[in-house]
Image (tube, rainbow, N blue to C red):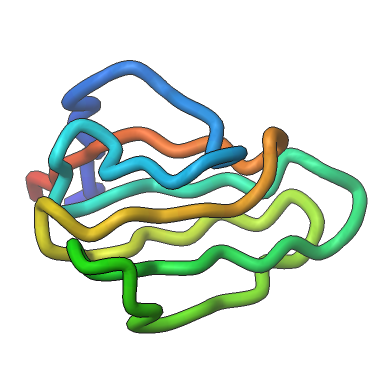
Length: 84
C-alpha cells in the first residue's frame, strides 16, 4: 500500500526561524540548485541538529512543536502527517 502525505498547513520558507505552525513532522524541500543547511533549535534557541540538503532534496524532520527550523528563503517547509 502506498504511503499518503497529509498536508496540515501552508508552505513557508525558512529564511528566519519558524516552528512551522507548531508542527511535529515537517516536509522540507531545498528548492535551490546548490546545497543548503537546515538548523533545528529548541525553544531556548540552542542548536539541536543540522542537516545538509542537496539541490532539490526533500526530507521529513520530526521535531517538538516549539522547536524551530531555519534554512534559506529557498528552503520550503510544511507541516505533514502520514497515513498508510
